[in-house]
Length: 88
Ligand SMILES: [Zn+2]
Image (cartoon, rainbow, N blue to C red; front, side, top):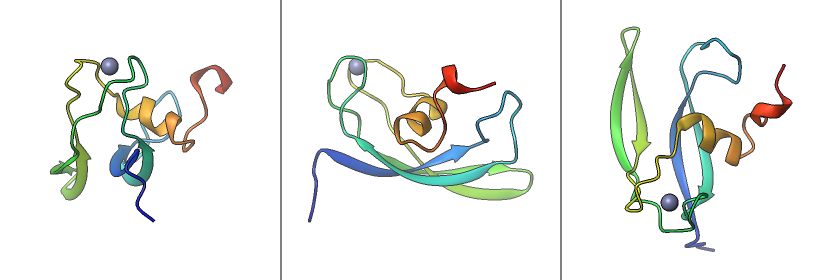
């Protein structure tokens, strides 16, 4: 079943801690709508990112509305990381 209102993307993930952990890539599914204004998110584009001599393939997108989806925010939106208020 294809759900057009969601998109599956690969996000660089440094962990939920205050200090960045090792980079992993987490695949998540989020809404295709900007959480701030409800406008359409941009189309995810595969991009290579290098870190510590390794290359990771991630997805990036640019929202037409101008709101920026931070990696940490979409990881919370997808339920991968706890919300900021629940962190110690
Ligand atoms: Zn927006």
